[in-house]
Length: 96
Image (cartoon, rainbow, N blue to C red; front, top):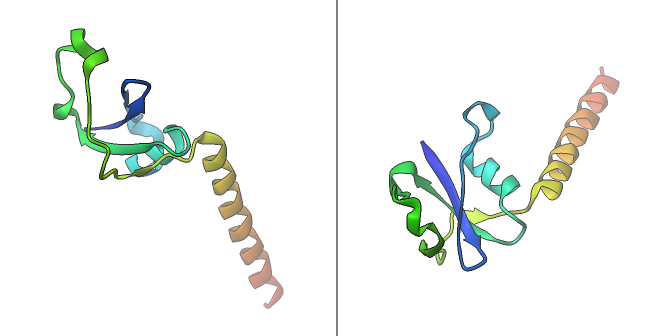
């Protein structure tokens, strides 16, 4: 199992991707991490099990796995991809 982490205030936010979402973890991160923030995808085992000091957790984001674009931008991107595919499909029907 994997987790997505990103900087949040003075700490680290941890996202748990829904297993049944059908989206690759990278896409979940792009969608659910706020726009412009770096994220890393890590193994669940890398998350400390002692949560009593959770507000003191740190992580190195100098080499992130990517940057979030936020949900609104992600959904707009998906709509554009679908619209382009639909337009292409309609265009190919016109040439038949």
